[in-house]
Image (tube, rainbow, N blue to C red; front, top):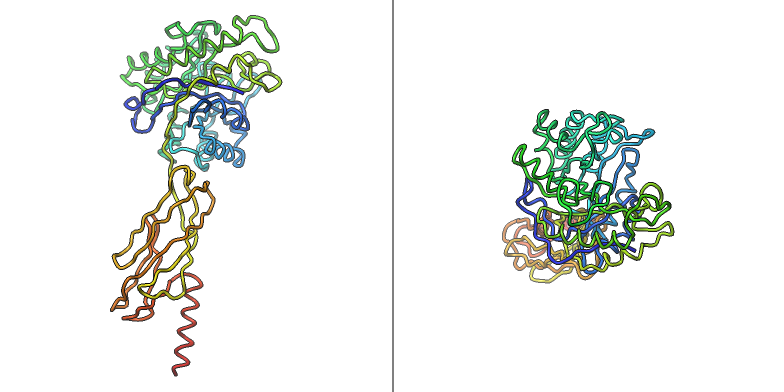
Amino acid sequence: MKIFKFFSTCLLVTALLLTPSKVLANNIFGLHLTQTEDINQASKIINSTNGDWGWTTIVIRTDQLDLNTWQNFFDSARKLHIIPILRLATTSQGNYWKRPTITDIDNLAIFLNSLNWPTKNQYVILFNEINHGSEWGGEVDIKNYADMAIYASKKFKDLNSNFIILGSPLDLAAPENMPKFKSADNVYKEIYAYRPEYFESFDALASHSYPNHGFIGTPQDVGRHSIRGYQWELNFIKNLNNKTYPVFITETGWPHREGEKNENKFYTAKTTADFLKSALDIWSKDTSVVAVTPFIYNYPNFPFDHFSWLTSNQTIYPEYQQIIDLPKSKNHPEQTTKYEAIKIHLPLLIFTNYEYLGQIYLKNTGQSIWGETKFCLNPKTTTNIVLESICTDNDLVLPNQIKIFNFKFKIKTASNIYEKKYLKWEGLTGFEIMPLNSNSSIYRPKTGIGEKIITLFKQILQKLIK
């Protein structure tokens, strides 16, 4: 079905971020999706030809905040090794998109923070082409956007420092024709004059580097209206305030003649695929580029059928197979590994210098899938206790799943005082075991039903002795 190339090597992007350790990339290749369910088929293109952890850009609207839909999407992205970039949107009214309110931003931030993302870095784009009036309530209002963007960035970061904020991409070919359009240079100049802190509020540049004007440029073109338009943006912003950023090209590409209507389309699908192949080679050699998600994977209807990789029959245009066949590289995104002990099974009576078998139930509460890489917890105990590490075998344990681990342990010698001991692994609270009395060589677990049985047993013994 689809997509891309990643070619030779793409150098790591490090020093370009506000917090440089946050954005690292080897594989720039990805796709722009229109619907969450497309991820399963699109992943075969994104990670084709030895690729791993490629990218996707997708829009999330204020009227589509369904927990199951988006958590399922993130869970699929985790299993398929896709890094999502979510572009915030409101809802359309007639021929324009509503301006976001503070409530809209709060709802989006709280909702996205409630989800278990597939990677530690959580990429969010603050709306779309705000130099088009149709994207901002019917009229361009750059000051209003700057206010909202600064608020949104703070809101997301206050909720979770792992959010990576991208500013709105601009239409780099838009004319200065207010109130419908504002040119990109005047957007940046107006924001800098009004609220220069805006440029501190986002971590990376989202760019729509299309081959303009009219989408008929070639990969060799340079400048503001070319596939290198992001370079013009970086230079322009740097001249304003000496800032630079990693770049996410979240929309780009050429329209092809194939589609519902053929008028005014200059190139065939073969030419657009050839151009994209050349462009990917150019972008992959630019160390500022982290990701490229061409527009658009599956939109075979007007008005974007000429950009769609899929036909109306849901088959990929065969000309794009050359992109799928391009060798890809591998990303290694950081994931949070977390776990929670649900319960432990220990013998009711534990004699010193005997080896015993126990079981511990651990729940995966993090982002990683245990077993894709080895998951092991080392013991943290005193020298008088021998305790095994607990490790995954070959099975996979997804977030929210529970894995039962078997382990062996032994208490070496009796204590001559009434001393508590703990079976403990890194990152877990210790499980207490106690001698039956001082100078005892018999221990008991202080857990759940075992505690109650031992207490009852001691009470019965005391009555028998009397």
